[in-house]
Length: 343
Image (cartoon, rainbow, N blue to C red):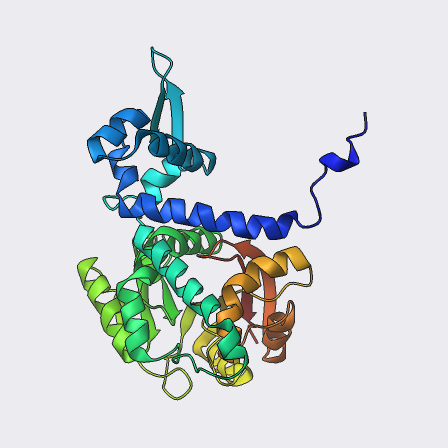
């Protein structure tokens, strides 16, 4: 039987969904502020929770139901038929402060920064304000101490380890350059997964100090070095077996010069794993990516069109071996594996 035409989503539904998402964001922000997911580590009824926190029982029930619909809470009925709510696996893993992978504060930072950008969109379009530079050392250091560290530990480092494990044997000795490594936790994660790996985290000096601290705390100072410098001007070393370069090329002044420098830094046969978002040709995929990367583009930073980065790598003599999607915080990206040819 054909579905009635009036039951299909209206053409405006995607734009109505934008307004509805703001309510969901507020519901999650309130849950984080109230430490709800820690509290609901054990099952609890809305009435008991409301009494414990001096909240309105009816409002509490509806709020928990919304969070359940967002898959942040699980629920089951007790013997009396009342709903018992408890934190979902995702919430317990990523949204409680006691978890090593907690990204709650990072999520709130992202929400606040994107709202600030959105609020200034009209003024910026008319040239009435100028956003602060994104790549200053102090800003990167602050990010490396805060949300970047949380997101690297929870998202980027596990993704990097999974990808590198497809290309490197655990027992082999090799040398890494983590370019623009921020807090250094990708290098730390790789060093733990590959016990014979040594490497360098190259970052702006202020952020490199943060990476050095994380390396020392992990007990890896004998195998990893944090080196401060400017990618465009300073020496990054040579003889690397693998370079991890994630979301760095958005900020370099000359893409071709940077890629030539990375090519020279690799051993013959060495590989560059180049992890960046590009603007897709399909509108739905482009919407997901541009919602996050528009602030970078607004700043005059580089976000390439789909396929441009591959062509730029080929132009510098790389052999592009593989491309695969990879999960990064906020928006999906593509990992291009490019090899320096053995002459």
